Amino acid sequence: MNPIFDHQRLLYRISRDYYINQMTQQEIAKRLGLSRIKVSRLLEQARREMIVSITLNAPLGLMADVEETLEKKFGLQEVLIVHCENSAQAAGLEVELAPAAAECLLRRITGEETISVAMGRTMVAVVNALPPRSLPGVSIVQMNGGLGYIVPFEQSTELARQMAARLAASHHLLHAPGIAADKQAADLFKKDPLISSTLNIAAHADIAILSIGSMVPQEKIAQGHSPLTENDYNDLVSLHAVGDIALRYINADGHPLHTSLDERIIGLSFAELMAIPCVIAVAGGEEKHQVILAGLKSGIPNVLVTDQNTAEFLLNAGGE
Image (tube, rainbow, N blue to C red; front, side, top):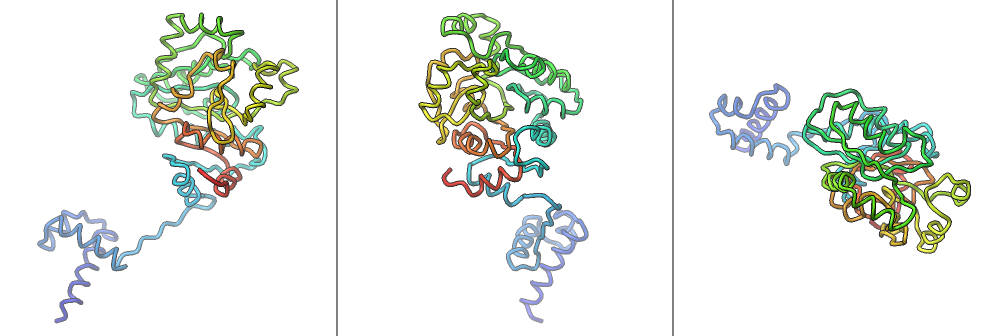
């Protein structure tokens, strides 16, 4: 008998029993008089020698290869690409991204986490997409104060409350503005024991979920539809700001920009955001391409939920 042929027949039989007949390695070992470790090694050899080949058939529309490439390119834990009908426009896109973001968040909750949440339309959509759960060991906490120009449900306070209600979780609210009138006012807010405690809880969260914001058009500032002043805007433009992550403005390289605005923000600092183990960024749309790229370069997000057009842009963008 040919010993090579006999060995290949053994490799085939073990592979058939394991992959086709759904037998465990222990069952195969007992049946053939081998050790389980020997069976495991033979299965590895069968794959190397192409006796076994594994084919994955991605569902239509799934961009798994692009997701994996982006994960490696930017050092991310996970990328989720959503096929969106209105991928070119940021407005309204959050509703299409929200279900995937909600699923991603829930999948990462084991039952005892603290989740820090930002504000804005995207987070409203994510909260609305969350199915009811009973997670009494989870805590929801605001990562920054509210902004007066935003409609009530988009305020961090209401968002955190609604998210906690969806998950039957506890919550920690931040009863303070996101941007104070001046440094002295901001310092007074931060000295308040309740506000200080809430910010400390937010800084030590296990998971954060937020969006990445592009620069506010100057006309909106003049119309009072932004928390920024004209001086804030001019300072940021002079430093080549492209947008913000939770009110912390960055340039195209993802570096934080330090202006007088920083001293008036009541919320997590750039360094505190960086220290959170899992930061889920939910953002898309052509007008946000550059700031999303900058956001990934900043190192703050390690999970990204975005649309297919943004994913293609990031894939072709130069430099991590």
